[in-house]
Length: 233
Image (cartoon, rainbow, N blue to C red; front, side, top):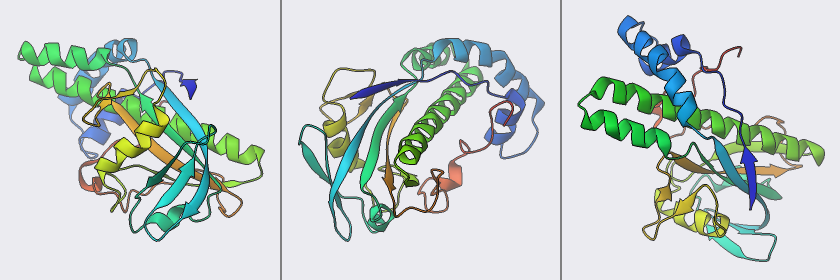
């Protein structure tokens, strides 16, 4: 298991406030985001653990992968398993921002400062999304070194047909060593603001950039985290 230390991005509070509110300006929200951003940036510790796995076999709704030590697992990706059919390897990852921000959100809720708690929580979601983009960049680099392309970032619970319960199968193979992300007996990732993903890599992919499946995602109607929220982008 490899550890990726991620530089904290400079999130633009104006862009984030607009993203949260679906493009509708709200001065109270903008000010609250701006006020909470320094604290959020201090609290988060963006990291990711990752491994490159060999794709052993694919089926109509599943893919079997093998880690470097010979351990393997069959992931029931669902009807869109064809998104991994060009893959010779996959980058499996679990990104996190740590526990401190969620602890701060809990304290604000206990103090009945619900609005600040909501905004701070949204900032945590934004930092986690940026950690995922850092994993994307690493996958693109690994693929480019091999003269390969990359597929979209896929995740249990987001890709239609890939049930969230299968995250346990992915995480049990990935999170076998102690690290910043762990898996409970119930199959839940800890810290709470952590997310697993799988990115296909191989000569059959034509793109050098990790794609998005937003149009297919089961949470697309209430998701704002793919908006541009980083300063300078």
